[in-house]
Amino acid sequence: MVEATLFTADDSLDQVYNRWHNWMKLEKYYSHHTSSSYATDLAMFFCFLNGHLGGELTLDAIKGVSVQDIRGWLATLK
Image (tube, rainbow, N blue to C red; front, side, top):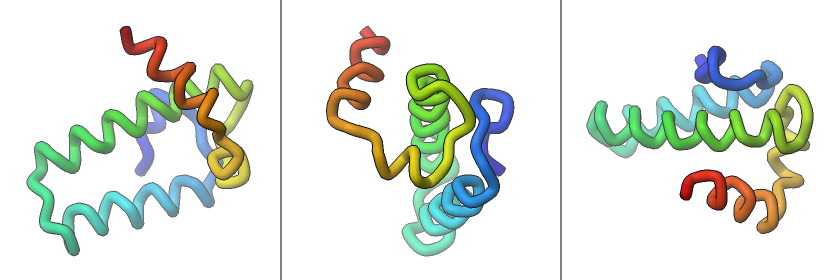
């Protein structure tokens, strides 16, 4: 399950997230701490996108993320 308390995403994005997280754990054998840290970072980025893009995240919204969007998120981390 995507970090639902931090951001809102549609079912298709939730499925992609779950496949990615399982891939890290089951195929790449990342440690619990590594996969948890990556998941937290992604959840923080998605939370930013909820506000930045204004609404529930979808796969199409993620596909449309620009370099400027990423820079905007990085600027909030300072």
